[in-house]
Every structure is written in C-alpha cells, then in structure tokens.
Length: 363
Image 1 (cartoon, rainbow, N blue to C red):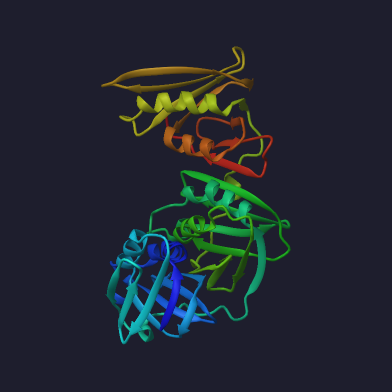
Image 2 (cartoon, one colour):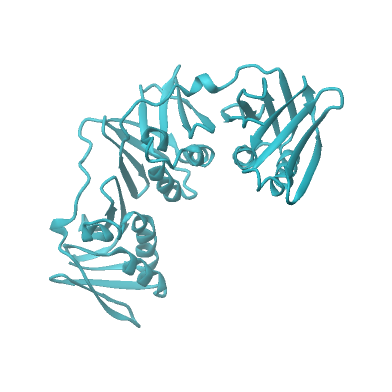
C-alpha cells in the first residue's frame, strides 16, 4: 500500500472512527483501525463488534493494500501533524508515515484478522433529512437508560405510528418523543443509544439526507462519506404512549427561560434531597412557584409569572426537569399535570412535534 492523503482529511476520518475502537476488549485488533484502499479512495474502519464505523476519504493511491494500526496512537499522532500532505507506505506490517518534517513507523496487525460487520443484504432503505435527524437525536437520546440489566430501555425506538416516524426513549423516570414526519415504511427498530450518540457526532452540521438501511438484526446509516452500522437490540419496547397525558387538571404556560432559571436556583438547595423540588401552580395568583428544602443548607422559594389553568402541586427531580426544558427550543413552555402522582408533560405549542414527560417523586 502506497498513497498520499491530506492531514486534514486523515485527521477528520480518524476522529470519526477511533472512538469505537476499544482497548478494553479481549481481542487486541479491536483497539486498531483498519486502513484500506479501494477505488482510489482510502477507507478507515473501526468496530467493537456491536458498532462499526467506516469513513471514506479521497487519496492519491499508487499501490493498493490494507493494514490495521493502533487507533489511539494514530489519531493522536495525525492530529499533532501540521496541515499538508502525508505519505503512507506499507512494508509487511509496518506503516511508514512521512511528511516534510516527520518520519515515523507504526507497527500494525494484518488486516485479514479484522472483524467485518456483516452486510445488510435484503434490507429496507429510506431517507431522513440530516438536520432533522440531528435535532431529534439531541432531544431524545439523553433520556435513554444506562442500566444494562434492562437492555430494551438502553435503546432508542425508531418506529412508525399512524403514518409518521417517531423516535422515543425512556428510562422509566422520564420520556422523550420526537415526531420526524411522514414515513411510508413500516419501521420498528430498537437502536442502541450509544450508537446514536456516535451518529450524532458524525452528523456535525450536515444538511444532506441520511440514508437508512435495515433488516431484522442491523441498521446502517450513511452520512456523506461516513457509514455507521450497529446491531439492533432484541426485545419488545414498552407501550410508552400510555404514559403521555392527553389532558390536564393543572396547566401553566410561561417563558421557558424563566422556568429554567427558577429550577436551576432551586436545584442548588435540592442536592441533599436527590434533586427533589416541589412546584406549585396557583390559578388565583397566576403564579408558578418552586420550592426546595435542605435541612443543612437552608431553603429556597422562587416564583415565575405564568398563564395558569387550575391549581395544584407536584414534586419532581430538578435535573430531569432541566434536561427536558433544555431539550425544548422555543421561547415558551407549557407545563401540565393531573395530580401529585401523575406524569408531568412539557411541550411547546409552536413545536408540537416534541413531547417530554417527567415522572413525579413521592413528595
């Protein structure tokens, strides 16, 4: 293998794929990145056997070939090089990397041993706008569970319902759902949230459509010159729609920034009580008040003016409430609930395609 490539392109590709390579695995080759030429292009690939990422970049190829090299070393090294042309020259399992100022040799492992994710042969394919997918991931992925004992809840469900494509997550304490618009395909995919966090990084500022191909076991996302393939999680996702309230006994609409501010301040006094804050909505005064008490630190009461229907109070985890408020992007938020033990729904009337539910604490 002999080729020339720009430092900028090689660095960008290594940044895309190297995160997936892991040194914690029992297979040493999984901490390597596969460097391979094909059709006068250079491809860099990494996998942890559940997720695989491949990034294609333009290169001036003199001799075809392939090798795997340590991902961490290669990424750190190339990112430290100045902009310009990099020469890659492979002799047996040693990759010689040279520029005008640097001459280095990286010891590799033959590419024959590198595990390749199986291709999706007879899958369904459809597209979604890149900007829409990025926004959906930002609003939804954080609410997935980290509890590996309940693998289904570590997934993001991507599914069609009544002709629309939805993305949703829940960790049983909160729930986030995004409507991605009409979709004619019949889709139900349980995608690891960790894979979609990698996809979010890959999406960057792309406005290109993202091509999605899937079968019963895997899903492939193609974003420009980058491909991400991941195994799907097996199991049945809970019927989360039952948790989303449709009407409210108590409802307050106010500036989102106001609710964020009073919640942030109250959360400082709620550290002793695991982030517990009590929100009271009063129709007579047109006020939403939030209270937190810490026996060692003191207590805090804060008020915000709101347009109120009904009166009532509810106790919530302030961190989950702030996460939900930050996922909304409009200037106002509507905060609705039906009683102390019923779910709270956060919405924005101007952006009804996103809904966020926070489950109450027993106050």
